[in-house]
Length: 357
Image: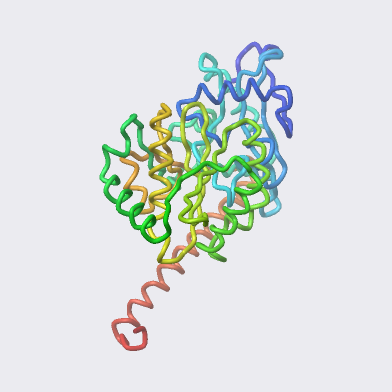
């Protein structure tokens, strides 16, 4: 229920945080996971459509909020978490002053389910999110990804099985090129050019990230102004062969994106670079390193714990309910088609193995 004193609590919807940016960032820092994808610089630059930042105010004090963006899907207004899509933000939720979580949840729930038709499609949510607690209607919540992470100590590298692999690869690079140096790049524009080149060489057209690189570059410039984005490169000889971009927020490292030259000479360079970045973060006293969404095998070399990420979907209004059922039916159809294709390939491989060799 909405708190009885409705004059004390109100909602203000805006496209930019403006004067509330510092207060919002303070609320982010009070979260169990202070996600970089909730910081003011992200909200001001990462939206792929129309920003819709819902502020919960107690008189003029910011006590909570939810960062969304609007678009239309099947003719219905759709609300997604701000930055959704190729930029893949993680560990998202509403923010709230710790002593006012219940009140903020009630206000947000009333706003999200107000009269009218709308779809909610919120991907990258934390477990036991405040948004899920706020919604007074039925919703579908599915695990969409896992995010490996590791708590840091000052002797991170020495305590892992990575140490020998890192030292062996570094010795090989020094032998082949004369040097192997990991260094921070403070020139953001230079770092962005290196990242684009190395990422494109490594992934090419298979990368959805490159399609939104311009938006990501804008995000990085804003984060750099707050000293919360870091670019590190590994150089062997005179050439940067691998690069990693990570965010550092409230004592937490988030490994975000990378690229490397895909040649035999540079094999293992990405592992070495990430290991050195995490080891340096541990020595500087950061609390943990989050490798964000994805259960790629290489992440098990660094992380011994995993968090789950969730996709929450529901519809408000009868027309939106129809649209949501259409989405679910289409997904079931795609799943069935994919399973059928895999089954047919398996049958063909057994009957005509030479055709597939």
